[in-house]
Length: 54
Image 1: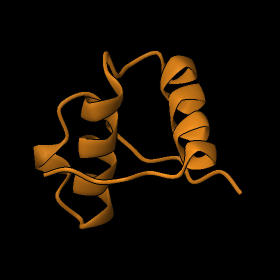
Image 2: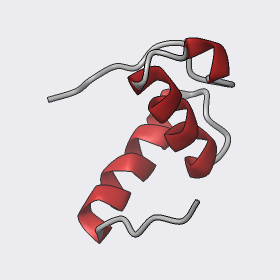
Image 3: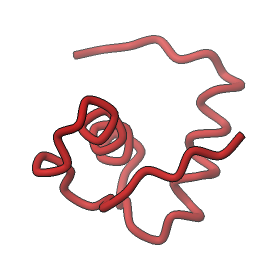
């Protein structure tokens, strides 16, 4: 799957990846966030919970 992410959103995701201490790549972090979002924590490889920051 390929997705176009606005530069501002990419910057936020990359910052959160760096500070997560878990995800080794942005792609893996986004995959884990999506799995957690659809209530499939069993498919999340590195993130165990999704912290929604507002």
